[in-house]
Amino acid sequence: MALSLALAALLAAGSSHAEVKNPNTFVHLSASDANSLDPAWSGERTSFFIIQNLYETLFTYDGGSLEKMVPLVAEKVPTRENGLVSQDGLTYTIPIRSGIRFHDGTSLTAEDARYSLMRCALMDAGVGELLLEPLAGYRSTFGPDGRLRPGAYRDLDRAVRVEGANLVLRLPQPFPALPSVLARWSVIVSKRWAAAHGDWDGGEASWASYSHPKKEDSPFHSRENGSGPFRLERWDRAGQQVVLARSEGYWRKPAALKRVIVRAVPEFATRKLMLEAGDADAIAADRALLSQLRDLPGVQVLDDLPSTDLRAVMHFCLRVSTAGNPYIGSGRLDGEGIPPGFFADRDVRLGFAYAFDYEGFRRDVYRGRAEQARGFIPKGMPGYDPALPLYALDLGKAEAQWKKALGGEVWRKGFRLPLAYMAGSADHQAACQLLKRNLEALNPRFRVDVRALDVPALMDGLESGRLPFHVRRDGAPFLDPHAYALQFMLTDRTNSCRYSDADTDRLTYAALHELDPRRREELYHRLLGREHEEAPDVVLFTVPDVRVQRSWVKGYRHNPMLAGGCEFYGLSKSDAP
Image 1 (cartoon, helix red, strand yellow):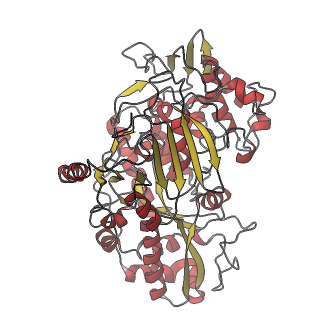
Image 2 (cartoon, helix red, strand yellow):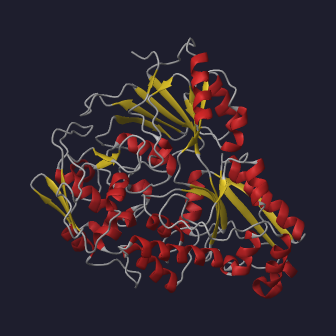
């Protein structure tokens, strides 16, 4: 840590006389374009990177702290100590700050806060389950019969109330992680603006009509009316860039930057050239490519930054949808495709797990700056198990698993399968190529196509259940072991694995509601053991975060719970007026 910061300081000092380009405009180059600007729809990283600058939550983390929170739309962060959380943990009273205005000039009220939480939960399209679970006690607006729960609106209406200038939340059961959930997902939108532009009006009679909409049908998809420090100037989808302008009427001191441009540039070489020329102020860069950036004049590489992410995860889809599926070839085990239940076979999954060269990848791709993961809970989080066994490259074991898979038919007939990753992710591409090499060396009938997908294609493949395999980065939607269990272990969540096991579900909920920290830790150790044994996914590595920016950028404070590590509000450039 000290060495990387010292290097950054030297680079900054060496470029102190460099002319700052466009001192009031910040250009950030990402590897992919946004998916949607609707806060209730998209938890995808690039989209939320933009959303968190247009809108505000009730409260947020204080600078780089993962423990201390500070109020935003709320006047205070509720705690038991200040009397805003009841002793039984069931009632949260959140006073809403007066004097905040949306970008259209209208006042933000407690009713807007209430509407925003209910809209996100009832729309249930992207991140709604994160609010549904603590507020209603279930994770989906659909019941076990596959139909909308007729009482969902009333359950939320009882839980989310306005009392004077306060937002009051009454939970069906204690949910200690609620402040962490609200710090990220209580994005406040304007109820009046939403209804005027064709969105839900907030009433019981109409809510079902807005459940699970197409993302493009939302007025928030490509427009906004937030209360954040920046407003949306335009989203140029053809040019794959979003332009933000400073909100001059922002309730705090206006941002130092007048304009922010977030541009998708999938090719790392182009991102590097633009950074070197000063045409970009910060870029997305995988650790595998840092050696090309460390010695560039006027460029800072901030390394060893805290991370709560699982940097590389192999995801298998256990129940692949066949409708219009371009990823399964023939759809049969005939050497030209895979059947839809291919990854439902545990031996197939373990065949992949033992065919990956973990140590070689850590050494050659991450340059030793990574740690092999022990399941879905990262080191440093409650529930992490340092005694959990690790997978290792063992081609003999891999061959044995493949010879058992699907009654031996996989080994005899072979398969053709795309290994997908998000375009621009060099380490994920390398992971897929390594698997391809090892699998095809095991059996010439195994044919693997490494395939880069842009964000819309990747998200569509995941949400539709058509993508059989992919490597991606997974972050915690909030700071609690349950946030990871939600993504990896629970039945019927719309994710890439579609793992389903009733005993695992019971164990997951027992861990969620357990109040004794020691007992809770034991339950999560059992969950991690089950993940290792069943391998519905294989978590490969945890890796420190890294930030690559021009030395003239000032005010960066890293927080891994913010998309992109920071907001633009605190940033400036050294000679900006």
